Amino acid sequence: MKKGILILLLGWTAAMASARLTSIVELSVGGGWSSLGYKLDVADQSLLTAKQPGSYSATAHLGYGLMFNDHIGLGIGADFSHYGAESKLSGTAQWLEVADTEGEIYNHHTDINKWKDQQHIFMVEIPLTLYLQAPLSSGDVRFSGEIGAKVCLPVISNAKYAGELTHTAGYEPWQLVLQDVIGHGFYSSEMNGNYDLSTKMTVAAFAKIGLESPIDDKQKVWFFGHIYGTYHFMDALSLTDNPNTLGFHNDSEDATMRDAHYFMSDYNGITNTTLMSGKVKPFSIGIEIGLRFKFPHSTKFPCHCDRN
Amino acid sequence: MKKTLLPLMVLTMLCGVAHATTTEVAPPPPKPECKDIVYRKWNDLLFVDNGDNLFVNYQWYEDGVLMPGETKQYLYNYGVILKGNGKRYYAIVTKADGTQIMTCEYTFEEFNASVELNAAPRKMALYNARTGNKIGEWDEDKVPDDLYLSIAQGVYFWRITDSEHRVEIRKATIY
Image 1: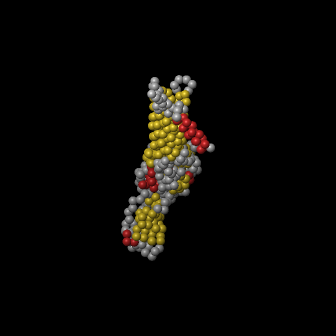
Image 2: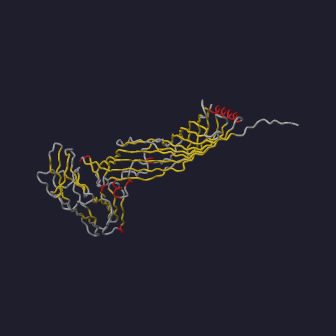
């Protein structure tokens, strides 16, 4: 079925090729919203709330296309795109029935405030595009659509985190809550840092829909605007085999504090914790604007020979 | 879960001597009208046992003088060592119905305990009691007469093997 459609499409485009070929060169920039597709699961931490507002998306595109007629064409290009995600944690993480530095059993609570973990992936992408264009009922404004697929190679992948932590201790037998007992591991701290994401090549599909309009009398330069959407089918993240549970063991450089929090993992990014579930499949939506330069190929007329 | 008074342990290994002593000084006897609900954690924190969830307000006193701002369930002097300062601490606690109770006084006393070994140990190893991690190990020819270690507060235990291969475990609480 798919092969048949492809053959028909190729045959039709080949037939159209004999008509009015037009080369186009286009460049555009765009921006909007993006996410990396993974989910945060805080079921093991009932006092914790996770939100994923997403991040900005940005893309720059340079492309070449060949229109077989006024309606359809194929193109290739190069994109530089950003996909991002943001995870926000708030509430309380808890470690129940752990031992303090005296060996006493207590419940450790870490209040988490303004915790943000932002991941950014910049990709170089090679799109293969099917152009779909059509005149509208009036004027020079035309419908402009694109669908296609692109191979995406991450070139910069990193993340940063920041937030405030308050460690407290709850001793149930005495109904005692210790806070600001700084010498024994119950303190407030601000934590921030960066970490690298281990990413890999993906394949994405994209679609764009919008309008184009000429901005010169000869209709060689066109302005266009699209709403775009991109979805990556493959996991862009190379996950570690053994991600850590949520922990902030490294929020202090003091060896005594680190010893007091021996039961925690280091925080090395939200993507390295068991809170993250699902695969990292970036997607983005946004608006792009650009210019399209159209170069009609010269028309070949039949030769009229005068013999004399 | 009532805390007992634990001595500060100082390890001194005197080769050829053989006795272990532990000195424990009890706090002053409570006044008849006071309630014995103040306990110590570490060497710098006192707290009121509110296990029955009776108390809603606290005010701490030092040598009978009100300590301004010290109105938490616990008294922690932000790293100022209370141990051995000889001062008397107590709290006036208030129940939900407004009834006030005075706790018994608590005084940090100096504690000193030494552990002297009967014979030169063949091997000694120090472990963190909570994590089980080995802090260090000293073989026969490297066991010093006096051992000074810079380690965090906490509970540790020594595993001592003597020259006749007998193993002895000794707890050490460092304040």
